[in-house]
Length: 256
Image (cartoon, rainbow, N blue to C red):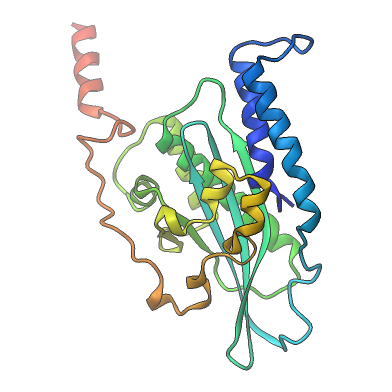
């Protein structure tokens, strides 16, 4: 379920680094990598204190009358991740947010740009939404997706701009299952997916109250949520936008 994804990521990054420098499976590790491995191992003992309720609805919560999925996505230079929460509202007006699932992944050795990784994380968030909707036996409102990447918000709201293949394919995959209006911006400091894209120590995870319940604004009405930024795409500045005019010019000269 990825409930410990932030703690697992640092070891994935260790393996990623060894692959990058082309270490063989039977070679001795460098001292710096051994120190990092031992430090990670020593922290695992603390996870004996980590616990999650089996039921997403507590005994005294009452009858849920409203349920909605919230998915967060984030990426940095060499890794990306997503985390999903279910928010329930009962007939007394109370709300409860619960962590359902998370994913933390390292980037390919030939690392894409951060904006491409952010878009990849958004694609994974959509896949998580499809999976959870299939598995949950609940009537759900339309899901809400959160990213701290303004590029992702701009790409999904652009109807006329032509993007390069990598970006265009992922935009298509995202919009096959969601609408641009379902995607919202959240500051990095309030984005729990930041934990799965950067990683946490076991000690930090135990002290992180937002991990199991998500940011506090999930329990508030939508008018109190973070607001979206300006979503216009500046074609002349974005490297992912196809330079159609340039292509036509090159083709014209090649024919002559």
